[in-house]
Image (cartoon, rainbow over all chains, first blue to last red; front, top):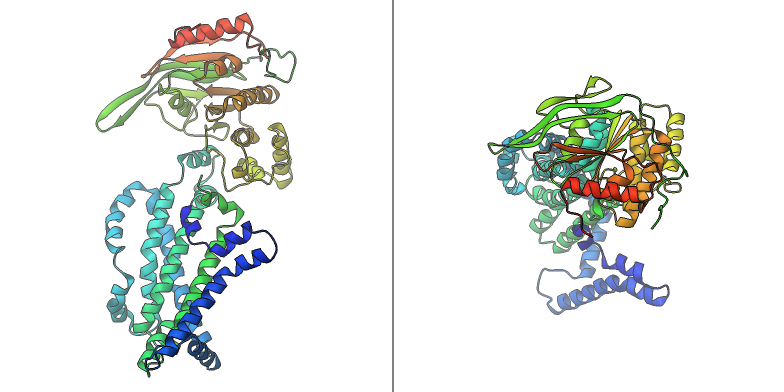
Length: 274
Length: 267
């Protein structure tokens, strides 16, 4: 699928192509050099404007050091990941089986589709007041918001994944006399797995976006809380940017983890495009 | 062109027929949709013997595949009955496997796992043994651990045939199994199928729109009319395998079949 290729790094592709030797090393270092150049420009720009709050990269690095010393960076990252994990997993274990079932029965789909289409475009953040009303300020409210952000994308992914299962696989499954349980486990599940993983990967990205916003309002820990708290408690923009960098890094690791699943041999057929 | 190696044995006798295997009586199929009734099959009566190789030919869209789906139990007929060994057919059955034109193998399973798909009830040792046997029969040695995405079109079709044969079915239904292959691969596959048929002794019902394919392979060729399809004619191919596809008798039967399908002979 084209989608996966679009987001892959230039560095990986170039490394495959390049010949061994210094040139290859230089090519490999290109993105690093680019980042370094940006940091230098940033530092110069900030040092020329001494009277403003935005820190330079050195200031941010100090901020990260400070957060690490107080143990806050790890603590808040764990808090955010904890909420994302629960919200995402709860959505996955409810939305995927439900979506597969609904997708299998055409009539159920006709009944459910309109409501799913109406609820889907509502930003998960719009649920914040209701989340606080239902659960108060705390972990549950944040988890609820992430759940709402993940549930409908996963439901629709599962529904369309079932639709796209070729009739041939279904017929072969029936021809070999599989029981319903065997059929689900040995035909339906493997046939939808690649699409489900792709959908889950995108949804996990959404969950990571939602948690930051949720933590700014509904709780008092986590990376989102760190950002809003650093600003409110004395305009500590070095800590704001430190939090942003951490969010980016963890988001990238989550995506890489999900993407590594696409290289599993029994799943790879679903991404080859033919 | 000569004999093209359509068989491994130098002289193969016509298969011994022992009684009626599959019996179709007044089978009719009507598709309904948008308030319209489209008759597809009409009053099909046919007996197929044990071990026989029967080809169904007819104009495209005439309902050949529909008839195969009725035989296979995938589609209940609107009227009439299908019986196998005297018992009515109600739904698909692992004793009769349908081989599809394309995309029939599971891309998430290796070659060995595909062949073993219908063998999950067997003890491990026996399953391994059967897989090895059929890997060899369809000449996929060395590809046991490969995934279908690494196989050519012809190899995938051989794999599908192997997966079907592995469960020891008494009838094999093939729905234009070589239709998506290039012409050279198709010729090779016909030879392979004949070799397999002769060594495994199954009843085969084979749908094709290729007149040459039918005359090269079949004991009998069932000619269907255009929709709604009826059996227009049945042609017995009385040439032993391997068939010389430039022999006068072969050409005569081929022309005969072309005429029956309604295609004027073009010199």
